[in-house]
Image (cartoon, rainbow, N blue to C red; front, side, top):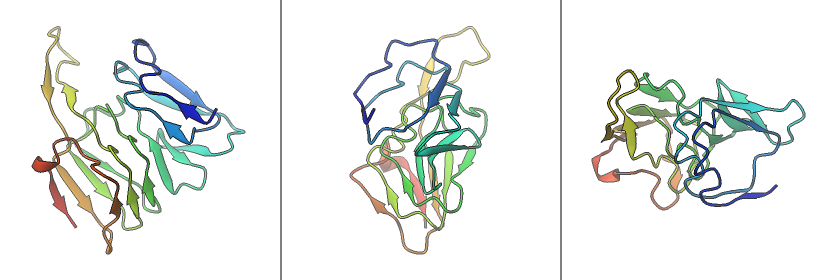
Length: 165
């Protein structure tokens, strides 16, 4: 499989684990939009192009961050992309209940389109209410001496992000 089209898993509300053998060359938009329960990725031992690093899906050479699970460590405030990562794939963090700050490594060379397109974060994981509030990454710290190439617009609400290089 080389492509997964837009909205492929849209109504799979109880999807909690996705196991990969081969990460496709093209990932459509809003793949896991309604899957806020997606907690884990697994990778088969004989995978030809991907590995897990702390539950996050990377290329086998560990240079490309492919996909961040929707609901990974939702209580943490900061996610630090591992040193050695050179590319953040298009829509890698899409619809993730992500942290407020992301630290990008000095090795980063490219950030794909809509890589951090996160527009809502549930605030009710421990309550019976069903409200969501707009939330998005507010701080991006880039440790690269040469800022990475940015494809189109990787951030939701880019006008409100503080970027530190």
